[in-house]
Length: 336
Image (tube, rainbow, N blue to C red; front, side):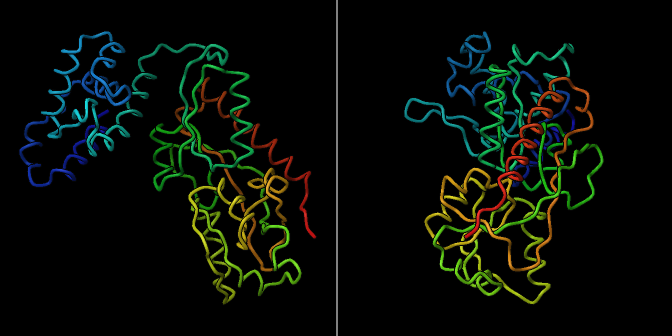
């Protein structure tokens, strides 16, 4: 908890550098009231003093008073009325990203342990896994069947993913096993995968598929992890080659539609494209250059390794991943 308040003070320092000495003198960890953050989270979720008061079973005046106290503590308006609605300040939008995970952590700590029942649970989980179309559909289908009250947040892969998982802000993540796993985390490695290059049917490169074609036609690059992306660039550079990058996308879900309507190429593993070959009329070919295989791993906080809900989530997501993997392996590649 103390680490969270330190992060909060750091945010305040970045935003209000000119008045930080005054603020630091005013804010004492022992004086901070956790209830203010609970009220702040309710206001950010509901966007209304009246609705937040109803959710917290408080009067609107009590909510307004709490907001005023928190404004004074952090030196920011946090939420202001614009056009009859409460709108968050930029600092509030940044702050809530730290507040929500810490409140969930506190809730887990103070809630008496009890068996996890997927059928009746209303728990919220967060996973950071690439947006693999087939995997998203399979995971949510299984949750809908087994745990209709459970909420799942499928979040982006951030630059500080390992620390976010270790801090229990994220329950489960998937990245390439390209580095030693940091302390405080546990992992399950998945089968090693080969890379394929994908293109639309009728692509000009199909008739003369060789190294020069792979280098000359523009590629789609997805910003995921060093294991999935940078290792390809390293291998190409090592061999004295340079490929063209035509597009950068944040997630894999946008690759297939882009390939279907352009002459771009996309190099990735079958697992990520298993349902897109037929849907978008794509071909998969082995790259005519020597590219390394890739091993992915799921990882999670060691502290949550025996938590019943976390174990259920890991089992569900990993089983869905394995099923998609087997489907991709059995489908084989489609080439002309």
